[in-house]
Amino acid sequence: MSRKRTTAAILVGLLVVFLVVIPVALRDAPYMINVLINSAMLSVIGAGVWVTFAIGRINISQGAFAMIGGYVTAILSTRYGVSFWLCLPLAGLIAAAIGVLVGLPILRLRGVYFSMISLSLTEAIRLAFLNGGQFTHGASGIVNVPRPDALTLFGVTLIPAFDGASPLPYYYLAIALLILTLLTLWRISTSRLGWTFRSMRMNEELAASVGVNVAKYRVIAFGICCFIGGVGGAFFAAFHQNIYPATYTVSDSMSFMVFCFLGGLDYIAGPVVGAFLLTISFEVLQPLQQYQPLIYAMLMIGFMLWLPNGILSLTSWGSEAVNRAPETPLASATSPAAPGTPSAAPKGEA
Amino acid sequence: MNQMLVNGIVLGTIYALIALGLTLIFSIMRVVNFAHGQMYMLGGFIVYYGTVVYGLNYFVALLLAIVLVAAIGALFEIFLFRRVLRIAKREENSMLLAVGTALLLENLALVAFGEKQRGVPPVVEGVFEIGDAYLPASRLLVMGMAALMIVGLLLFVQYTRPGRALRAIAQDKEVTYLQGVNINRMSVLGFALGAALAGAAGGLLVTVFAVNAGMGTAVSVKAFLMVMIGGAGVTAGAILGAFALGFAEAIGYEIFPGSLTYLIIFVAIIVFLAIRPQGIMGRTS
Image (cartoon, rainbow over all chains, first blue to last red; front, side):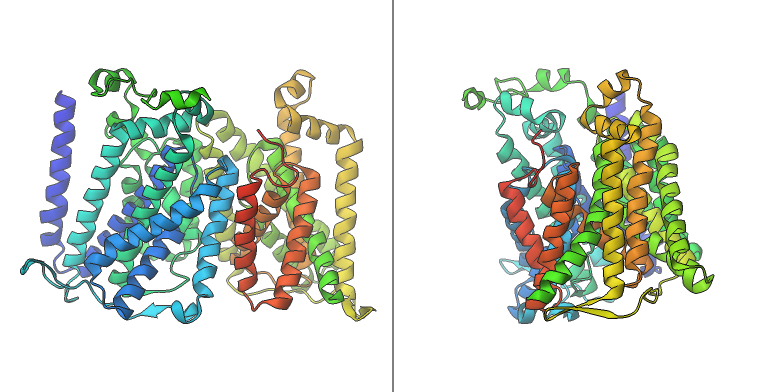
């Protein structure tokens, strides 16, 4: 109980720091705010990859879906004047739709095969946008993407238009999206869906044999991942006000994956810890600019050698929801069937 | 038409060298060598520095490239992969380590060699005419040497004791261990050989296409495609995949403008893998 309370206290503390202390302390340092915006949104996109890690797929395609989200936002808002607040979910939905379509065939692959094909997918999508002709403007990309406009509902202005004078509105939006994403992940991983995902990671055949519709759930996981990637891409398109085919490359797809494992694959907070640590340390190491990617590489190798389960494996915090022994969900399960044997079990008899 | 055929054969032979290295490492270690493209790039740079900067004979420089890149592969196995494969609880770890080694080599190369494109002048002059197609002598040389190395590797793997041990490990590691084969030593050999092939390909092709420090990922992606077409871990599959990609590229570049070729290749491969996930020759498991 007291541990739960400590966790809650830490979370509330973090919330206060991020929503009150940081904006006040850094109000004259827009650059640092920008760094935090980047960290927050990169963690959001990385959190998407975490979902595919949960089903045991090493996904190096997230950059492609962030790119799709970015282009959806850029095209809809510059050409059709669609509000950013509509673009944001639309970008996610379209990215998820494409993800499901592509995922249906490629998710049949596993292990290294899947990671190789997903890496190729990043290249393929980049080339698709590069060759998009008038629709995507090829290599010159789409510029002058408008800033988020005011969000009004029944005549009440819920969110004022972003004027660009201060990065703070973007900051709050990024933090809000981050919190929303983390809540979603937490909800997923503590629900039946999360246990289904984990059962697939452990042993897909076994999961299928007890009635888990493996084909369906892996597409669901991939779809969620792509949705989050698309939303993140939409944010960055409006934040940077441009998008190019070179905005997301294979190395970006790789970093999204690296965030997850640096933080720790078993932890929901993994991608957040990884993204913040890497993004901020890059800023701190500014004088070593030239060597940053080199340090990045050595960090990665060092972690695999000495801390293969990520930074969060040093603590016990954050792992509770995911790593608890299976008794707990059995006791707290509200549905009649035990987890791991969903009610759809008879399907597996064939 | 003939030109496409000639280009396809030349590309296919070189690609086979790259794909064989990747598939060799995969079959023995169950690790995808993400640094394969970076090793190719290093091979190219070593030959460039050997010949252009230090004035060595091209063939001496090529040998140097092969030996040095093989040594990098061996060191990776001894100091990195061995430990991580032993302690890893999840399959992801060895893959992420491989990604880390790729980043390491690429960034070391950036620091050491800079961002410039580096090429080596062709070793031999002249052009052969085959029907209405042209084949520069330098490309013929590159192709011939690549073919020679491929045949050499296949003979080594087929008929020597270490070669047999390598094949046995690819089939069943535990049983091979029970037969008294030193798995660690063989893994070092396998990794070094695979790396050497990548270095050799880079050292050969640098006389045709210039290299730069950032090109590794693109080469790796091509290598992955070939291995996926043919089936990972299967020698014949790697060669088949290499020629399939070589011809697709040669034909595509004739018909389509620039980057459209690869877009079509990617889409075709995704569709192909949807139908046959294990590749042409791959085993299902």
